[in-house]
Amino acid sequence: MFDFHIETGSVTTPKGFLAGAVASGLKAQGLDLALVYSMIPAQAAAIFTVNKVQAAPVILSRNHVANGQARAVIINAGCANACTGDQGMADAQETAAITAKVLGVAPQEILVASTGVIGRPLQMDKLRRAIPEVNRQLSPQGGEEAARAIMTTDTVAKHFSVTFALAGVEVHIGAMAKGSGMINPNMATMLCAITTDAAISAAGLDSALRTAVNQTLNRLTVDGEMSTNDTVFILANGAAGNPRIESEGAPLQQFTAALTQICLALTRAIAADGEGASKLFIVEVTGARDEEQAHQAAKAIANSALVKTAIFGRDPNWGRVVQAAGACGVEMDANRMSVDFAGMAVVRKGQPVPFDAEAMRTALSAKEVQAQMDLAVGAATTRVYSCDLTYDYIKINADYTT
Image: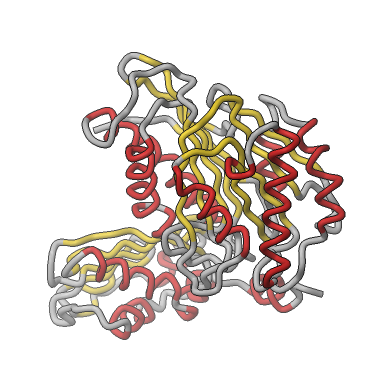
C-alpha cells in the first residue's frame, strides 16, 4: 500500500533534532556517550523490556515518559547500571538532572538508557565531566557519531532514515539502534532511539510505535537472551508542519507503515550483526493456528542452537528445523506440514522430498539464509530475524568481562 525508500540517515535527519557523542571513559576506548536533543518540545513514547530484572534507567525513563513528552535521550555504553540498587537509581536520576541542567529543560524531560555489563555501578565522576561536553558537541550532523557511541560488541553502527510526503508535506523519521548479543526482545530491542519531525498526537505516536515494534523488533532474536535494559524511544517534535496525525485514520496508517519499515531495517541490521554472526537467518512460519503460535514456532527455530550451527556449517540437516518446531508446543499437523530450507523444498505433506545436497550447501553459503515451515493448521504467518551461531559467539561471551 505504501512504498518507502530507507536511507542511511540518522536521528538528526528530521528537522529540529541535534545529536552529539563523546568518549567519557566508561569504555576502555572510543565514543561511549550519546545525546539526542529536540530543539522544540516533543511528544514521546517508549517501550521497555519485560524482563523481571530491570535496570535503573528503564525504571526512571518509564516514569519520565508517562506524560507523553520529552526533549532529550542520553545513552551511555560501557555500563548497564542494572542490579545496582538504590545507588543505581540515584545515578540514573543524577544523569537526567545534569543533562537537563545543561540543556535548560526539566529533568522529567530527559530519557536515560544504558548498556554494558550488569552489576557494576556507573562511574558518575566520568559522566559529570562528559555530559556538559556532549552538550557542546550537539550538531545537526551528530547523528552518525551518536549511533557509534552506543555500540558495545556491535561491529557496525546502525542508523537509518526515511523521507515521505504526508498530506503534501515532507516528513522525516530517523533512527539508531545498538544490539549484537543478549538479543531476544519482548516489547523492545536492545537500545533504540527514533526521531521524527511529524506532528502527531501522543496517542497516535504510542499506537504507531507499538504496531511497528510488534511487527519488527519483537520478531528479532540473536541468542534467545532477553536484556535487562531493552528500550525503544521515539520523539516527535512536529517541525515538519504537517496537519497533526491523530489516533486513527489514513495519515496514522501511513506514518505507522513508514515507522515499521525503518524498524525493519534496524531489525535486519541487528540480526546480521549478531555476535560472531556470519549470516542473516530469516525464519518464516505459515499455516499456524494464530499469530502467537506462528511467532512461538519461528522463535523456536531461530533460537535452536542446532539449526543455527547447521546454518553456520552449511549442513543440509533440515531435520533440525522440524524438531525445533515440533518441540515448542504449538499446534501442527505432522502429516501435512511442509518445509523449505535455504530456498529448497525438503518436506511436502509431511514426507521428505529429494534435494541436491551440494546445491543446498552452496545456498547455505549465502549471506542471507531462509527457512520456511508450513504448520498446516491455520492461516497465521510471521517472520523472525536471526543469525547463525559461530565459534566467535563463544569467544566473545566467554571473555566478555575479562
